[in-house]
Amino acid sequence: AQTVTQSQPEMSVQEAETVTLSCTYDTSESDYYLFWYKQPPSRQMILVIRQEAYKQQNATENRFSVNFQKAAKSFSLKISDSQLGDAAMYFCAYYGGVADMRFGAGTRLTVKP
Amino acid sequence: DTEVTQTPKHLVMGMTNKKSLKCEQHMGHRAMYWYKQKAKKPPELMFVYSYEKLSINESVPSRFSPECPNSSLLNLHLHALQPEDSALYLCASSHPHGLAGTYNEQFFGPGTRLTVL
Image (cartoon, rainbow over all chains, first blue to last red; front, top):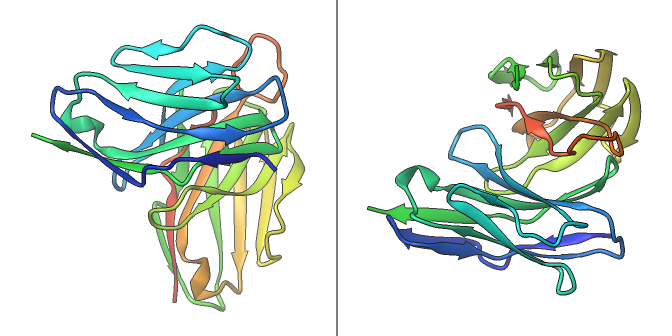
């Protein structure tokens, strides 16, 4: 079974600085998607960024970017110029098909003013 | 409309009650999902509907009964629940896998926080 591992249960960053959240996954497939979702306390889970496995170029969305290393099965999220509103639980997710959506355990990000 | 709505927001029920959770989306998605999420844990997949047909049932107890009346609606019927079933129940929707020209990210609703007494 495909597994997703987030090795950092908690991370902390100073406002305006940069932080990187780690994610590794295991799969034997060549075609899949990877996502980072953000879930603020008591609020809705929203998509931060997605990466198609067949694309070599790393995805970026404003202050959010990923470092996708397909051979190493690594998919880290970099948040630049961190803001107080970035504080949340971040889940890395692997999607291999309707029957195969896996989440990592999550990383709780704290942003210090 | 890029929203998934869920009702009710909160639900408290006894172990002998029957209740239903509702989910609705108008994004034209033909895949819909129910997840259970315990505090500080990732969502756990319960059911998947694809083109209004149940395609995945992740060994969920029969006291949870899903229903997909049409392509926009998803229900979760609850009966004889246990206290350990207390959790946040999330609905999500997406385009079906392999649909050309689409991405497969799931859009989540805000959830129903269920407490079983």
